[in-house]
Amino acid sequence: MFLRITLILQTIALFAAPVTAGLLLSVPSRQPLHSAAAYTVFAVAVLQLVASVVAWRPGGGSPKPIMHAAGFLVLVSAQVALGIAHVTTLHVPLGVLLFTGSVLQLSRVWTPRSSERVSRTPSSV
Image (tube, rainbow, N blue to C red):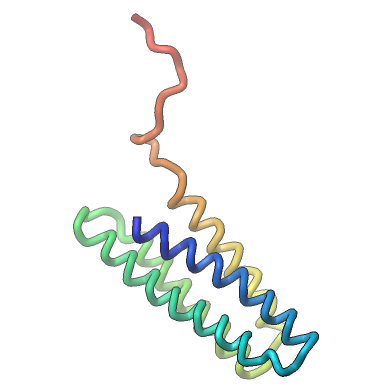
């Protein structure tokens, strides 16, 4: 459950970042707002990594979510560094990639597992 919540927060934060970037383009004094959105994305990515480890430990399941969260954190770190360096030719496409990846990861966590799905075929009596 905590994993789902952090993924929702991550996706919302990643959606807010380009919105604040648009505000930054229209009013240059909005730069602190975009910075706040960027660091929120970073903080939520760290929280996502922690949530992945916590979700993995008790059940002893697959460590794949940890690897995804760690990779995502590396990409977010690169995104923040590119933004600080004003390398928009890489910053913008990487932001699109991050948002798409977050939505895909959220869809994977949100859909029920095959063992939890209810069979739609009629049972024979």
